[in-house]
Amino acid sequence: MVIVAIGMTAVITPIVTIVYKPSRNFTPYKRRTVQKTKLDREFRVLVSIHTPKAVPTIISLLEASCPTKKSPICIYVLHLVELTGRASGMLIVHNMRKTGRPAMNRTQAQSDHIINAFENFEKSAGCVYVQPLTAISPYSTMHEDICVLAEEKRVALIIIPFHKQQTVDGGLETTNSSFRTINQNVLANAPCSVGILVDRGLTRSTMNQISHHVAVLFFGGPDDREALAYAWRMSEHANINLTVMRFLPGDTTIEGRKSNSGNDYSVLTVETERDREKQLDEEYVTEFRTKTGSDGSIVYIERIVNHGEETVGAIRSIDNSHDLFIVGRGQGTSSPLTAGLTDWSECPELGAIGDLLASSDFAMKASALVVQQYVGMGSGDPLITPDSPTVHYEPFNLDHSTHRQQPDFHSQQ
Image (tube, rainbow, N blue to C red):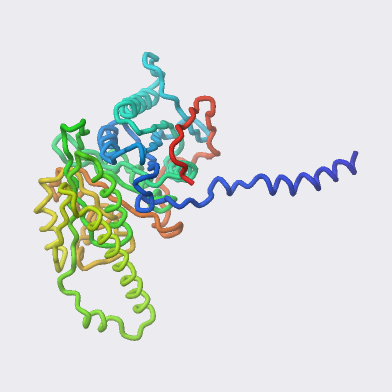
């Protein structure tokens, strides 16, 4: 018996090692960004929601993302609930609940409201698949729920609400400071692109009734290219009018660039990287203009500015005529076009332009989506741990009994 046990162990161990590989769950996939997700493929989005108040604007944004038969939208709706009175976290996968069943508590009532809203959206929109989930965990690990689910479902974009909500007088106020920390940690650890939605109300457009005016502020860099890619997708919608305003420096000369380069290897490396990014910007903008040049609903504008004040003036000139701004976060980049805008920044995680659009001093009435493109793990900001009670966290307890089958959309692999 001892010899048989040793023999079985010797045989089974390498077989299990070969067959079972947990890393397969996190196999790299190509379409981690909106830019790399083609308009004839399935578009996967993870939406994180704390309270039902953000639901109408998020649904309006998703409806404007132009779901079609060629490019259906698969939406994973994650209701985030703070863990209280438990020792381990939980992830609940819901079916669309039958109406008429009373909610047991306030949390379930909120989940029901969110699920019903997205169920109605799924029925009315067409080419949309919605999978609602609830994550119950402490604030300190809530970003892990979002990132792990995004990795497992192979989504291209995570949409998270801004930590400030609109008040009755039109301003923005902080509802929970922990939400901001969660957003910062998601930006630092996300396995795909991330969009932070500053909600000032965005009316959902019904067929041929309401048209949205969307503006993209393009300064250059991967985040701005991702913002343009998402706006490009939205422009396919019949009720979307798109304005792309590209900002160009007015005092950039070849002599000035040469004088800053010198013989310093580090400076030369930075200049080479900037030149590469500029080339990528030119190629993508040229492709966008070539393929959309005949579309009368798209307007392309170039503005030459020299400093931050002129940039602000250019943005103010169009802010009242649009109801949604899409901008890049601009992580790790510095530009003379935004010089001075970060000196009094309230929310650096939004970037210079995103913070400007979210500022109460700017008197903006439109919603804003601040986009960060996925460029590889380890390139984000450092992890921030919110001040919350220390709670032992265990892996999700997934309720497979309530899981429903996903329709046969295009394979994401």
